[in-house]
View 1 (cartoon, helix red, strand yellow):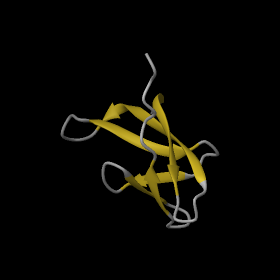
View 2: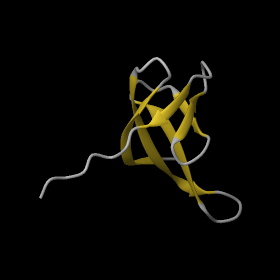
View 3: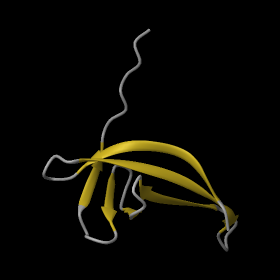
View 4: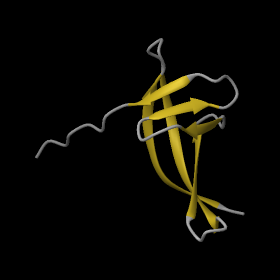
Length: 74
């Protein structure tokens, strides 16, 4: 089972620490035919998605909030 990096973003914990989160698309699909997306920190720790902007580190249970995307200047 291979995974392809499809995105990355920053998230903060309650203490204000910033984490780099990588989003992967798995090459295999789930039983209902949808693609499987997984999340990991840049250092390899697994991350669970709780909702659109909220994530949780599997190992420690620390909750992370996704940082808003910067607006590109034109």
